[in-house]
Length: 577
Image 1 (cartoon, helix red, strand yellow):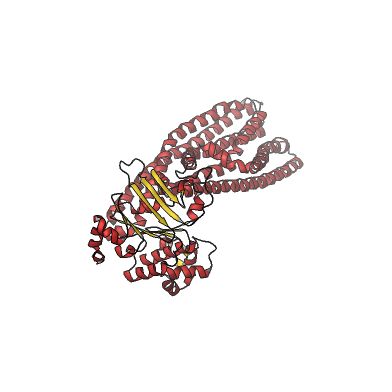
Image 2 (cartoon, helix red, strand yellow):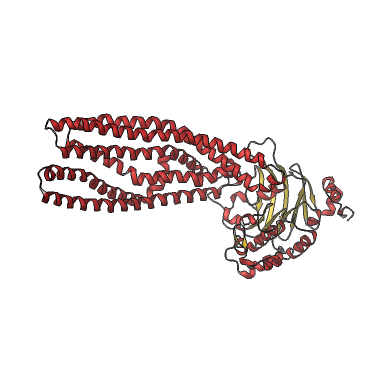
């Protein structure tokens, strides 16, 4: 998976990679030249007392060093840009894939896991690319070139490389194979700690209200301890790796000096050649150590790459056919035909045999007890979920045949839990229509009964909204969410219990001002209060996912015991109407 991910996302940067290889090759050649020049200074300059030769060769070394530094800086700069661009591209593709997911797809992975994959997992692979650009390219060139130059200095002494390099590679390989399982467990535990932390931050009010701080603290400490334990095991293995490299490097240097000293004493080797050989030996083993850094990162990056590719390969469960409908004609309409929906693996359906038709200018209300499937009815219209039986039709066309962007452009959804984004009031309203004028925003706020409190805010439309709308009340959030839907001017309005946080007077004013705005649209209102839906053209009554009533308020009072019980329980006086 790692190779596949690198191949697919580094392909656009082939030219830059070629530049990195070229720059690194020149830098490495310069690095390999320096020990030979240094040996010449010792053997031909210092030993013979030739000062001119020392100055000339020293000047050449200075030029080579400057070239080496310049090319090294350029290689790192280009490599870093490639690595950062790679990370940007992978995050972009992951984000686009996740935004195509349905709620069911997001639930399959888990939101905390998706966040980890887009952030931490991408970073792990990006670090590998960065290290590869700066280290892994230079390492093989240094090893091959260093061996050639070492043999050139003394072929007999170079035989010790046949022992040193395999010993180092073997030791590192043993450590790496033990690290891979630890990194697999580590990423799962990072998912878990993100999940717990996200739950606790989101639900902090509930935690404090019920005095559960000690319990939640203990729960976090548990998952934190699990992650710490796994990290320590992986860290211990990593800590073993580098002493092994240093031990082999130092032991090899000692053996080289020992054997080289004997060869110098016998006249088979010069002092400068031994110093150059030691430099090449260190360069070769340092190249192995640089490769070790990359290899040490590779297992964790491989695990992360597998998790990234898993998301990229996941096909959204809700897609449009190749011959999708790209245009809807005629007046708006919404129809459910014998609709059934059940969650994957569920034994019983959430909805079964739901049928109704709502046309332009009509209001369909949905009421029922908690868990009866009211929100599910609303979610099936914009295809947040797909029906598992029957058909949902918009303008007479099966929603599964409509191009998703077209479908979403015709629907204005106010969810049960209205969510506001960080930014200004205007920014949140323009989520529905980026080109909406200021006048259109104020018109929507007036209809939603939100204009007064927005005017009272310090900046009006430019007033800041905190993440999730935490700096406004629940009723204000609902009214801003309703205004956002109104800005879109959709064909179908879906209000999912969107008036629950409003007092009765505000609720009545909002519905009165809303009536002339939705005359050409289909309106679906999910509500708990009978007073909110009493004037609806049709009221759909649900009980345990079953349709037990469909008609006007007056008809249902006479024909639907479930509805009559709801009206009676609210003591609205409507039962006598």
